[in-house]
Amino acid sequence: MTTPTFSNRALALGAACLVPWIASAADGEYSYQSSAREARQSPEEIEDIGEIVGDKGAGFSRSKFRASVTTREQFTTNAQLSGNHLSGDFVFLPSVEVGYSTDLGQHFRFDLSGRLESALYARFDERSFYGYSAVATLDYRPKPDAPRVYVTAEPYRYVSYDTGDRITQALGFGVGTDWGRSFNGGRSLFYAGYSFMVFLADPGVDDRTQHSIVLGLAHAFTARLTGQVFYSWQYSDFDIDRTDSRHIVGSNLLYQFARDWFGSITMSFVDTDSTQDFSSYQAFGASLGVTRQF
Amino acid sequence: MGLDGSGVKLKIRPVFALDRLRSFSSPAPLLALTLVSLATLHAATPYREATVTRMQNQVNYGDVKGDRSELRPAVVNDVVRSSNFLQTETDSRAELKYEDGSLVRIGQNTVFSFEAITRTLSLNKGSMIFYVPKGSGGANVKTPSLTAAITGTVGKVSSNSIAIIEGSIVLKPSGKTVSAGQFARKEADGSITIDFYDPSKERDGVLMGFNGPLPFINERIFVRSDQVWKPDISGFDTFDRTNGHPGARRVLGPHGPANRPEGPPRVPPPDNTPEVPGNGGGQY
Image 1 (tube, rainbow over the protein chains, first blue to last red):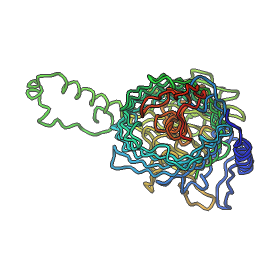
Image 2 (tube, rainbow over the protein chains, first blue to last red):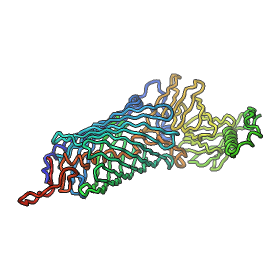
Image 3 (tube, chains in turn cyan, yellow):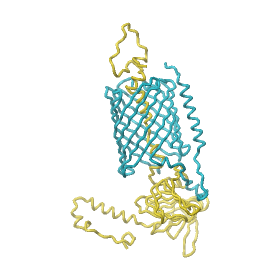
């Protein structure tokens, strides 16, 4: 049994980060100061068509660059990812993401994002890690509402807090396609995607190919509240004698506190069936997160 | 006068001569030509009339006769023509549907009319939301402050501003384009502001849901949609890579005797001391 030496640190850190962010988000409710020269809408007009006000501070967010900071507190029934629900734990997950996106001609688009992330386990603190991941994607979309086809490169590297050793690093290359279609007057959206990836990893036991499909259904309950259910299946074939089949079912609610502040509640169930018994597991997870976009 | 009523005469180029068409082995070119012709004709359809499809509270139907107008209470299925107008009282609203599928929803304390040939939607006072289908030939929007040409577009209009939800408009006479996510507003000093509007308020307003959602596909419905509606499973991948893969287990420690993807099989110690459960060959 692992001694919960990390619990106070992780939970306190998580709570300390979550509370002021939520409070700050609530305090920072978007408001727009009208200038003297600005023509005003009448209350009747606002009631009928909503308020038409400038998107203050939209300069950076509408540029080709983006950035966000996210903190998430998650409970999982299986921190060790082995067996069924035998290692419950709280995990604090802060991350910083930056991105750049640009159109390349009429049909192509390039997107690059990098994320620094960390996971701090409360009970199984020896599993805590930090690292980075990045995704470079070149999209091709023949028409605005046509499926997207893309090629992607995804490097990642993670290091153990406990030992300082590198846990894993890899460079993935892949192709994929996805497609989203809105309906219900634009309030609901169905999403489907497929990708094939090849990962060259160090240590080499992580070398693998991976097929993934994902299906999602999103619905905007209100202008600020969006709900989503999704299903994903991944099939991984390792260079060693191992194949994994992983099913993920999840749902989340995302609420926009203010223009750049988002809160999310996520629930998920993961079922992995591996040819190596110790890697078969089931896990249920629930998390609460806050994101600040820039 | 041309077939489309625009006064433009169609010229038949030699490539479309009948003997040339006969030489095609497939009916596809003929079909394409027919479709293009139909689309051209359809594109020029004037706004001859609109039907009142929903009303709320007090809406008046105006009939202009010479230099005077007569008012009567409007009813659902009233046919509105270019010689008519609709006027709403406080807390009253209405929806009109045109033959080409265009929709107009007018808010309270509004006076609305339209011109047939120029396909101009005129907001004399108040507010409205319009939807003009793509490929319908476009239209114009006219308010006391702004005039714009529109194509397949969804927008909100008040007496001094136009906000574009989908598509784009071109302001007249400046020729400046206002795209989806932007608004144009005539300010108190007479200048015109074009800027991005607050997207969180895009779906606000009673008219957005009046008689159901607008029949357009809007991929921008979700605020920063590309970061919201697409299921993000990267978090699951991160956990799997750092805890569930063979390489990770070598560093973080396995959880059972079977967890040795590499290396020689474990040989029991000479004294047959049982292994500690859950700590088979760990590298802590």
